[in-house]
Length: 335
Image (cartoon, helix red, strand yellow):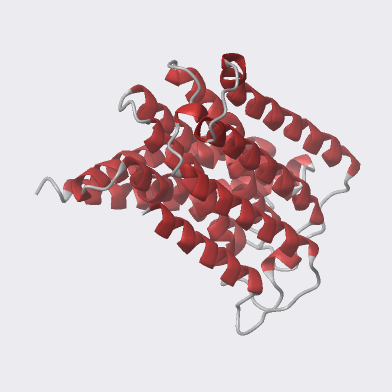
């Protein structure tokens, strides 16, 4: 009976996340409408932060309580791969034109910045396994460097936001938030964020328990099960945004989550770890996941640039096949 309980908790938390994500997506759309901010910027700053907080909480628990840096890192880097794979999934919900050919090109900058942060994290993970002996200050400075790069990326996007005009109205956006005031949108955003954080933590705890029941390794549990659990808020929120026609919001949420995971979550876990450099303590197993997430980021960036494009067959696109193939490769290599 005890083995069934984690699955019940997992499914209940998943249902709560799904329900809250509908309101989070609508509140994000309303905030963009009422403040004049682009949906891409709202997705990167507000939605990505809200949906990435479970990664932060569960990662900190894995480091501080379970003393498992590989479990925490698997949740971060595996979540990055999951987020990019969801963009492939979203293609199936968009008719005619390829999804990434219809979003604002301003999404190219945060996509490239997220790739740069992931690549930099990969270098810091690689150093201890490459027979190199960098000084201690460099090891201890790796996570702050990533956090500083994240802050600079946000400042760059704020500056770009000031120079860009308001979003063009999406042709298929559902008019569901016209009567929402700024105050109502803000309150609903905060409430939905709170619900998603606690339900997301419940998902991760249940997922970790399921992994232990199955006898899987920490790296694999982190990269697959824990990453899938903590990525469910991003998945549900982006699909909810897609349903109301807010495509920029949907894609920006996934890209922004990768920025937050690599720049903020890694920095916090390094502070919590307290036994040296968090990244320098990781298994080399994570390098394959990092490399594949870099490849997936490149696919997304090229797809945003290549326009206009239709579908190959039905609702299938080249990037869908590439992202899905790389995602499967990451899981096989980690397993």
